[in-house]
Image (tube, rainbow, N blue to C red; front, side, top):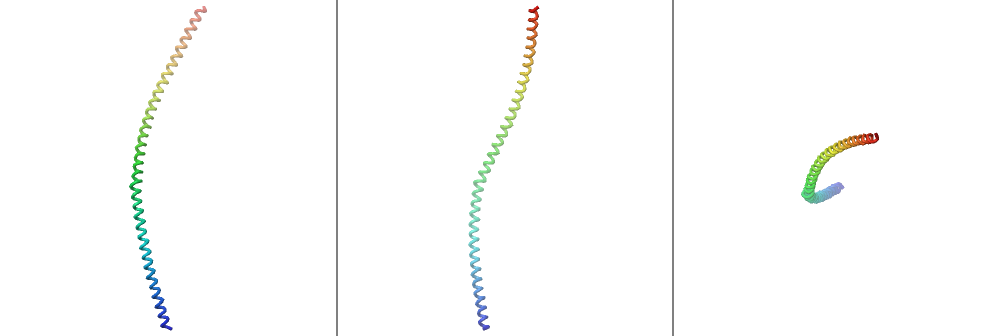
Length: 126
């Protein structure tokens, strides 16, 4: 019986070793397959990334540069318009001052003429 037990244990150990070796080979094969798949995915992602960098980033950079130029032009136009508005406001202020002085002169002339008319009326009534 002891011999049978040793044979059984040896057979069991042999089976375990066989399954262990099969398992290791299967695991190695599966891992090698997964590593190959990951390498392929990495390559595809790097290709896609390169395409993205080459096309999108440069086009986005170009768009950004265009926007910067447009912004600078608008800024220049804004300050130009602001200067024009300030000079127009100065001109408006000058014309308003002239008009006020003309109104004052007209009021003085009107009062002068009213006095003359009143003086003439007084002379004619006497």
